[in-house]
Amino acid sequence: MGITALFNISSNLTKIYFFKKGVDWKLIIQIGIPSVIFVIIGAFISRYLDSVILEIILAIFLIILSSFFLLKQKLVIHPNKINNISGVILSGFLAGLVGTGGSVRGIVLAAYNLKMEVFIATSAVIDLAIDSSRAVVYTMNGYVHTHDLYLIPILLVVSIIGT
Image: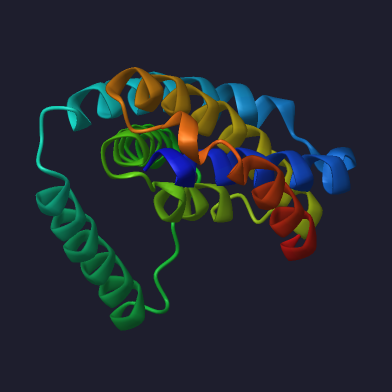
């Protein structure tokens, strides 16, 4: 979980650099701030749960979510308060608890029909706040090890190439 958070930070910094003109600050405040609060809660709780159970929960959740959208291809998620609040809480909490919540946050942002560069930049800024928050909590939980820190420059290069 710790290395994943560090890689995501590198990836988000790269996306922000390349797509910085597309940042939508209103969405960042509306979606990002509550997401950070719930990622911290989820990250603290993760310390008390078995990582194997968390991986199984994540797998089941992603299978159900993808199956739902596969079966309901014409379903449209509207950018209303209920969808935003539930999506933000769920994505933040999942990001902290199991290390990923981007799929849910992507659904929330997709409801706004944003241009590609706005979607990427706005999502990257929100993800950077989320990943930085959970990286701090994961470090406190003992998930980030000093012997893994040599990977940071490698992760940065990989994220630049990937972006």
